[in-house]
Image (cartoon, rainbow, N blue to C red):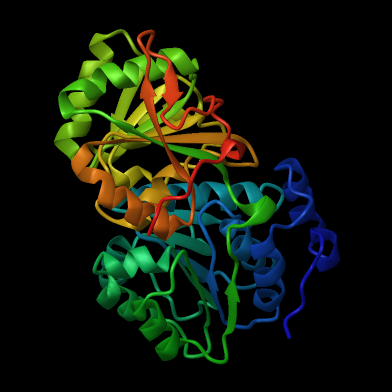
Length: 400
């Protein structure tokens, strides 16, 4: 049975790594870190199912840095993830962990950034590469990346990556690593595609499942608000004012809706920017950085942002459209209620959407309480209970 730790000090990590963890405010390991870090440090393969926002980056980042070999100048570890935003975020987190070990060189490779700029970075012999599958494979084909000495390969958000059609790219990447490379799969769900990769590339893997429950469950109050499409801009403005929100996200299903909605809110004098797949990567980076640093209050986005933005103090998430898949609902609302803060999620629906909401409610095993707006634009629960914005207020669970 794999070791379970109570605190990072039990791991006897290198002092530089412990110092970086302290700077980041980490002293107690999360459940996924408790169960994943010890076997990874032992060199075991791991397949881990855990909800978003539970500390998965440190779960594989700490072993990657702790097992770094200073005498080897080849790529020693790779982290492959589905989106540019997540790639950038993971690389930034790993660089924070490596603050006091500057000899560890970390590079992010993703589409939309200059290939020549990345080639220049690769000439500096990075030890750890964080990449999206397509761009990593591009560099491998160019001969600018060699994976023949990789000791650990991590697939983060493996379910989403394989569902997006990257299975062939992932296989080519893993086939380019040594046969004894440690393979770690981190995923919110364990799909058939994830299991196929596990069976093919892992050996005697430690299987870990961490459920979001109890004190580890995100503290997110979830609501639905019936509103026709033509009324939703007004409803959002009323809610932003009534709830006095300083930082929030609005998710739409389509890029055209994102661009249109951002302009409508800007016309009303709100501090807004937007993020979707047609925006050039450099601009996307600036938008994400601006949101993290509080340069604007509202980010309107497609699901491309749901897995890439890690901002602790997002107060509320609005679903302008109901997400097309249940998993997207979880990833969207997971942008709030982070770092043990209280969060709120409000989904706009029509009468025709009630079956869809019951399906989401059953899938998430959570209470989604119906609200409306009174004449003053204040949110009011339709069941007669007072609206407090608190997850503890409960409400009847959706019927299956």
